[in-house]
Length: 56
Image (cartoon, rainbow, N blue to C red; front, side, top):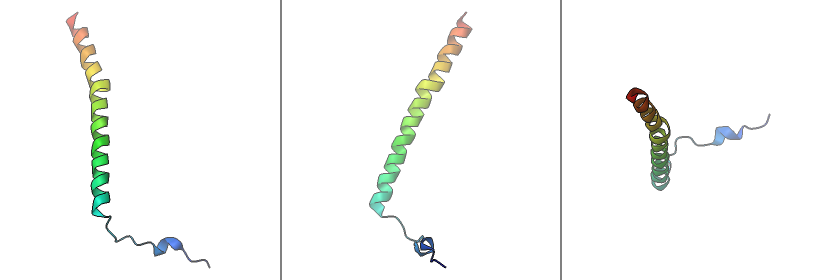
């Protein structure tokens, strides 16, 4: 039978500190962009809509 190369992969190693920091900054940036999108494209329009509906 053929040897499974995936069993040779090391899974107990930590990622280098620089890569972890870079990845965490990228994740934080993406999360911030998503929150701004949610605020301005979902929550803000619904608040404006409900304001004008109640104004009548």
